[in-house]
Amino acid sequence: MHSRQKKPLSALACKSYNKMVVQLFATLREGRGMKADIPWYEGLDGYEVLKDLELKPEDVKIFLINGKHSKPDTKLNQNDVISLFPAVGGG
Image 1 (cartoon, rainbow, N blue to C red):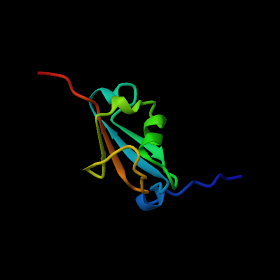
Image 2: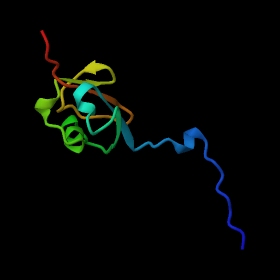
Image 3: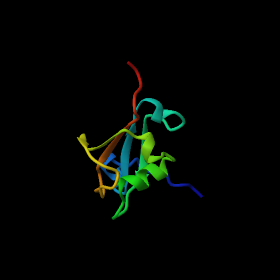
């Protein structure tokens, strides 16, 4: 019996419509990498994203949604891009 080879799917067909991208910067990347795909569902807010990434709200100084400053209590839309930055020390 011959096994059927799977045909490659187009990039559009491979795109997941139920995930969102979270970009991590500086120390927030430690153990998490530069980007994370988070499952999206209606009602998802930034606090749930932080919880999913095992981050405390106080660990994140800047919370951006699609490049705009926001707060973690904001409800997120499908295909939003979240960027998280820690507080940076220095003088």
